[in-house]
Amino acid sequence: MLRRIIVFSFLFLTSFSVFSQKTIAIKCGSLFDAVNGKLLTAQVVVVKGNIIQSVTPAADFKEKADSVIDLTGYTVLPGLIDAHTHVLLQQDVTSQEYADQLLKESIPYRTLRASRSAKISLENGFTTIRDLETEGAMYADVDVKKAINNDVIPGPRMFVSTRAINTVGHYALSPKEYNWELGLPKGIQEINGADEARRAVREQISHGADWIKLYTDRGYYKAADGTYHSYPNFTKEEISAIADETLNSGKKFAAHAMTRDGIIYAINAGVTSIEHGFGMDDECIQLMVQKHVYWCPTIFICDYMAAGREKDGNPMDRLFMQTFPAMFKKALDAGVSIVYGTDIGGYSWDEPQAKDFEYMVKWGMTGAQAIQTATTTGAKLLDREGKIGVIQPNAFADLIAVKGNPVQDVTLLQQVKWVMKNGVVYKSLIAH
Image 1 (cartoon, rainbow, N blue to C red):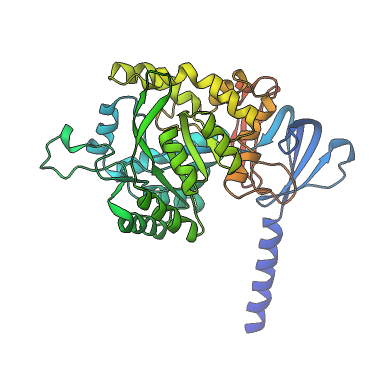
Image 2: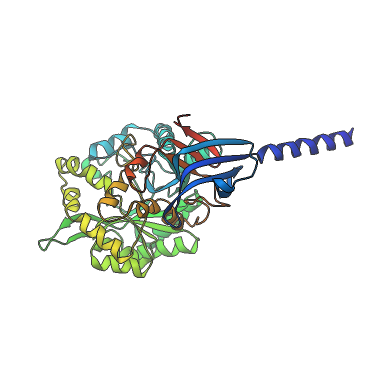
């Protein structure tokens, strides 16, 4: 009897292994080689499980496959990477929209909405995202990530930063705007002093943070000489404690920083990426190049927010947009590592997630360079080179397809027709 059980178990495991190793051959009309920034014609990608096994010219392909996906009428690209999202936020053009979410929606309700955001992101062709804080929803991003990893809900592979860090009194919701007797929720984790800063980093990492995010400046304004400035949020001791604890834990940190007053502060502390940086200057650009700091410019949201926020009393986005194009071109020419990030969630998830590509091309990038910001550069930022953002052997089988040539027309990335993540097809609008 025992022998039969052993034989049956062996046969079951063997058959399961064989089943799990079935191969899929994907015939591509064109394929974007993200490493070299070139389109290759008539390629076949072989996927086994969740890994790419080979990429071969169609004329040389001889291997037998268990199934074939015909994308010969399409351009196939690596799954895209959005390095700045907020799945737990559903637009905050005005301060009232932000307050309504924190005051009127429970964290469980916001998490259910986040599951929709994650699905939208995946179907938009973004198979990997870095989600940069929950805006008052505590550690719910870790739950969304876990649900995706456990196949409970569809969504991109996620790198999460949980709560983000700022100092007391420098982030919404402000007691001066509400009844000060109430214990209002906060969009971030507040700290005072280096010890609290260090504790916040430890707490967030212990709850599952992949990245640490901090807000280094506030109160943005344009000086009489045309330069942008802001007020720093942290003392040197506080930001040094955050950096020290983050780096000593083998993690990286991202800094929301708009002007030189926050950007230089963050760079000197050892930040990995500057988020937004709408009002940076030449010195910031030089420092970013020297210290290999990534810039995640989130362009579309600045334009998207401008009118609504000015009506709400804040003209800064409109002012930033006046100087943004020239500054972007300077950073590009100087060799800053620009990584694709949208800040979606700050704007509606029903708006295009691939809109930033248009601005990048309009402001000086080639189509190929723009796509690389969301593929190979994004993979470098996340320390996943060779695993995501590329179509090559041993990479994860994260692939998307569009109709036409996205190198010539990046707006096609707003019309993704087919999405595979980890070897599973999640979207198919392919005409046969």
